[in-house]
Length: 332
Image 1 (tube, helix red, strand yellow):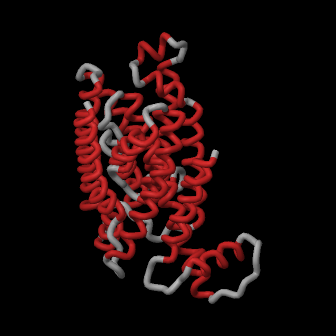
Image 2 (cartoon, rainbow, N blue to C red):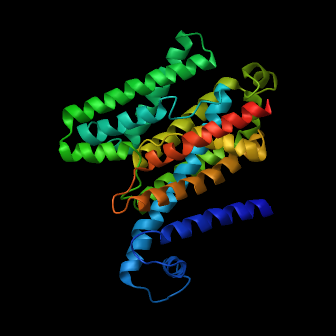
């Protein structure tokens, strides 16, 4: 219980400190006053400019960053368990690329915009991409290594489709905006984005927590899970659709952010072990803190031009992944 409270406190503290970073002079006291004012707990006079910066810009951005870290992290946990492959994550398996293509089809071409919106288009693209990965993996023999190779192929295919659509149909302003978004960006997020991301991620986290004991069984193979009485196909379908939904929603808001789902589950395993009842919440906490700080540093490091957050996660994630793999290799 104390560990859970301390972990949540670390997330809240990270969000509050991240809000203070930037060209405007905003202190933790200002942040506290503004947040409590909007929650109806206090009525402390605060400059309107500071109130707008905190409540309309930085707080929604920090919360979406935290939700993205949680969602992508637990998606990585699910993928690595279901496929029994430490390299599995939504980015490598083509889900992020497919979601990007679906969002660009809606955003640039306007196809299905009224019916789907960016999130709906991204969800359809994510499902198509992952369906293609499973199909190619089955053609190649259904080994987990073959699924990873199929994911690499799907990633390249949908990345090429996205680039083609932007090159052929987007004007120069749209191209700049879309390309920056595809590298991962929390610029311009608002409270409706917070509600969307938080709602979907909470559902995904609850789903993963509910099936934590099943994920433990999946790490030993389908036959073991089936012998324990689990409906392997149904559980896999539910979890994969949930993963696609979470990934698609986050991509539609923040673009394709890589390495989060790959690296953070390994970091969490080093701390709490492989048991999914502990691994899922640990990954969620680490993911929230990690993404809040990566976004904060990306926002101020090259101010006034923000560094795309996907670039930040790659710069941190690749060395971290190398270090984790080297440690795992020494421990064997």
